[in-house]
Length: 156
Image (tube, rainbow, N blue to C red):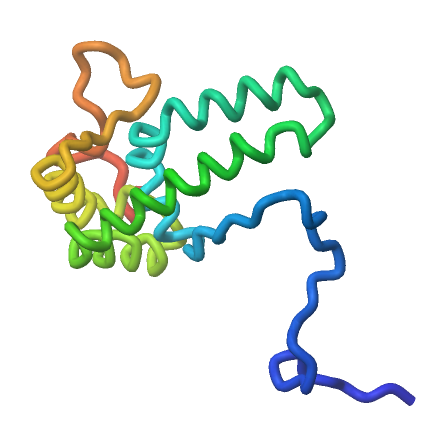
């Protein structure tokens, strides 16, 4: 008969069953859950655009060899880590308010427009980054700037 062993209280530390080879340099993970990443997603896209494009180009060229693009992937991770730390240094209160709202509202943007606007203003004032949504038609107000959007938390 087997018994349950809680992995959190195990006597042995966790060991990765599939570690990377030693010749591949290590990179610190971002250490953020889905809500902070979603909150920062558009800013990461703008701030790390060159690194993301290099990575995607490498991925398309390598076709199936993930080891070929590890250097580019590490650059993307470092860039995102850099931006998240800058967001925490400069706009911590607004950033926390926005990602906590996303966390409490099933990762939906529309109930969190008010904290999103304060975060967008802070990011522009302190870091010079603006939130641009790809695919927004020219001359039309982006959905995150619409004062009274028709989509709300409860559809009628």
